Image (cartoon, rainbow, N blue to C red):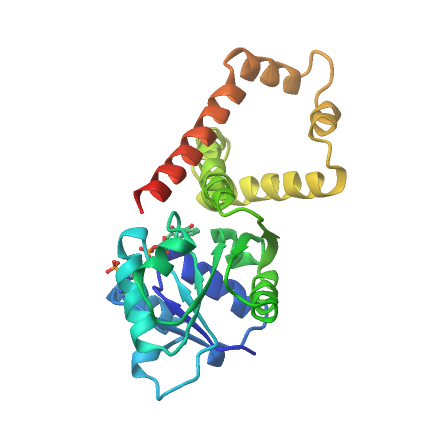
Length: 264
Ligand SMILES: NC(=O)c1ccc[n+]([C@@H]2O[C@H](COP(=O)([O-])OP(=O)(O)OC[C@H]3O[C@@H](n4cnc5c(N)ncnc54)[C@H](OP(=O)(O)O)[C@@H]3O)[C@@H](O)[C@H]2O)c1
């Protein structure tokens, strides 16, 4: 098992680490480095070791998982501290060539864009590789395959699209589900547990149906009967141009992702 160092132990590292542990990845092979005490506590509770409090250990891959604004500083810390590090960058927006321009020191870097569903083994991770050799790239793919689906991308710019669609993706559905939460609250007299369980079963059923069928229009037709409730709901969504609004939201996220990319 490869030794992984999560450089930045915030939201996404926590989700990926949890997913890896769930998949059987040994905690002894996972390390972190984070300056934030609240994130340190969370990882300590998971029994993940702080690299700064660990005797010298051979790290195979360093996962760069800090916010874009902190990424270049953290990158310099890594290349100055580790010999020819193999970096897996989760950082949105910063292109491989930018890191190359930053130092003459030797390193290799692959970009990976996971999402928080990795926590449950249901993640989607896009990978873009420019400098890892085939064997290291395959090792990285194998690691992320343990926590969900891995999609290899052939153009770095597509990572920005992926970030807006899939990296941020879970939040769009959480946002839409707020309407369900409100309506179900009335049925369940505000019982949070029942509300959450009902919504989660609804979403799991949706996922399973898509996995089985692939044809989303047919799935809608299978639920909607003439003059029934579904038809009334869908008709109203169409009238309100819900799809158009949703499309616009996705486009705004993709645009922002590209803007961040252009800032570096
Ligand atoms: N969240 C997601 O769903 C998601 C999905 C895909 C990709 N990403 C990417 O992953 C990266 C991390 O996102 P996140 O949401 O996990 O961020 P986050 O929750 O803010 O976690 C980053 C952590 O790294 C720490 N840190 C920053 N610079 C450091 C340094 N030089 N040394 C040690 N620790 C340092 C931060 O400490 P402070 O709090 O003190 O700054 C923070 O605890 C971002 O670039 C984002 O684009 C995120």
